[in-house]
Image 1 (cartoon, rainbow, N blue to C red):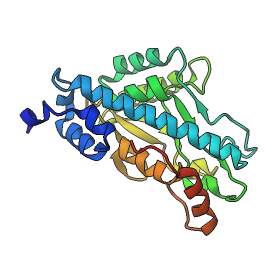
Image 2 (cartoon, rainbow, N blue to C red; image 1 turned 90 degrees about the vertical axis):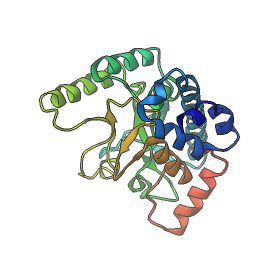
Image 3 (cartoon, rainbow, N blue to C red; image 1 turned 90 degrees about the horizontal axis):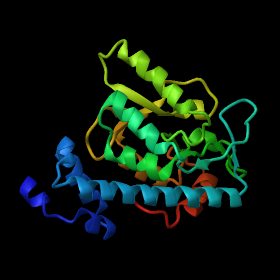
Image 4 (tube, rainbow, N blue to C red; image 1 turned 180 degrees about the horizontal axis):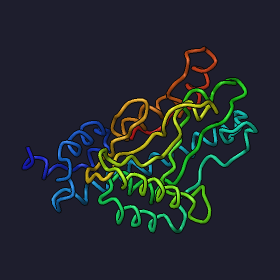
Length: 247
């Protein structure tokens, strides 16, 4: 199987619409995806995934604003906040800092930190008052929403606590759970298991799944993967999700 995969054009096939097959083949390789025969194309696929994800996020933010959505923090005051911040000048520095402390990062994380940045879609839609309960997309990896290296300090505290008891793999926290997004006491944060030398990452939320699978599921629901099924919600989701890229 490896000999066959070695000659496949992952990037061309990904762009041509074979995303699921390409991700399957790269995941099957595990850490071997970093071998010279595979690494350049695998990283190129992850970078293209990140560009598509960034385009989806920018589209969703623009459409939500047009519909009167209020982006805010998950606090009692619903403090207004920016929903999307591209990578800042220290994004690559943060990437190397994480690698030095945890070992290899999945290729998709490298792409996300360098190309996408941070997204926070928590808020309230005028036609959907409980939209914050639908688990809006949040991924904070690059620290671009936090000045003065705030996210690095947060990650450093989490890494230090984990190093005291390494019975379990390290879970890099990247988002509050769906209860906390709705300003309700809940469980632990969503995260990504590290270290991991694979192409895709293992995302742990309500269930564990590849990160790209989680993102595709989320974008199919316009950034709100836990709607309750009310007709108004599906109308909003349909309008928001039209034409989004598959990753």
